[in-house]
Image 1 (cartoon, rainbow, N blue to C red):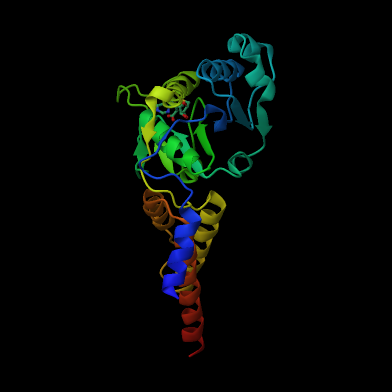
Image 2 (image 1 turned 135 degrees about the vertical axis):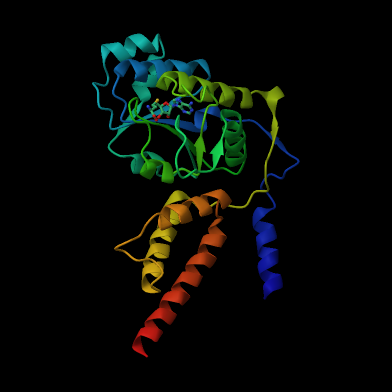
Length: 271
Ligand code: SAH
């Protein structure tokens, strides 16, 4: 039986790229997501930064300024097509729907660190993800307060642009420019990159969210998590699993374990 499973797996993955193949980023398949931007000029400047580097997909989550506006058009300096095609959405969840890899750009060092990468490593992760047919979003936070912890927890990685530790917050569009530049470099044929790992299917964010809900529920059922005093347990567990990047098959195994634990907890309660 085991043998048969292994054979099926091998067949399934035989057409996927291997470590030896070289790939480039397709910049049209990278979404730039700006969350609650408050200055229309920054939206225009971000569109300009994207266009100079060949990126085309701009998502605006709940902008807290007029959009479209003359100021964003002026600052786009001709990147009108990017602004014209920008998709305005109510919440981040909608923007991330269907994305298999989510990277959050953050200027701040957090108390509880998240797996952190540089813009260059961000481009490398994008290459690998796209080679597997996945789609990627890079999200940028508010001018005043950046991304919330909750938003960051929805990201597989935090991307930090190394900067002066005493003055590390770049202008929003400047941050977009630096990331877009690395993505552009990674899209050039002469800059082909090796894939960082072999290609099995990573679990999409919706599956991961379902897993975390199930995990929390189970930890309550087995009386490990005290709802009145949850501390940082779920955040720490999220960070732990973000470091491993779960595959779909692994999520299924873990959820099977959780279901079994819940069953035992129910039986024990009846005894
Ligand atoms: N005052 C905010 C910074 C906002 S800057 C804070 O403390 O978080 C607006 C956005 O630009 C940030 O949310 C982030 O997405 C991006 N950004 C600015 N500087 C950055 C840096 N050094 N590395 C990564 N992203 C950065």
